[in-house]
Image (cartoon, rainbow, N blue to C red):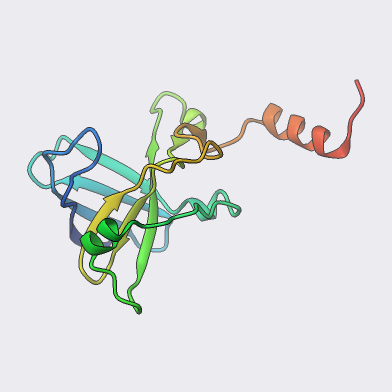
Length: 150
């Protein structure tokens, strides 16, 4: 990321699962892209790459039912701009093996600069969804949809 974009600090009152002790993250949203980088303010060695999953998975609209506690944490008002981001795991040796966590979206309130990570209870969304489907996966899906016969 070249640093051109929007930067803000997001406060996670409960931290992020696995990193509960880290509460503040610097969010850098790259201009004109679908990517962001989120760095822990207290420990710059902890960083996450994020994407807006709807661009890769147009059908992805998680059933986000915020509890009253989560709504309170985010301090949501009717006109708030609440964003949904997902953490990606980048495989440096083979980018085609990168995955996205659709099971646990990050919900960020742009007005209050607060965030929560939800763990969805459904079995539909994967925590390791391939970001780039392989050609074989695409062919298999296409054949299945067309009713191919072996």
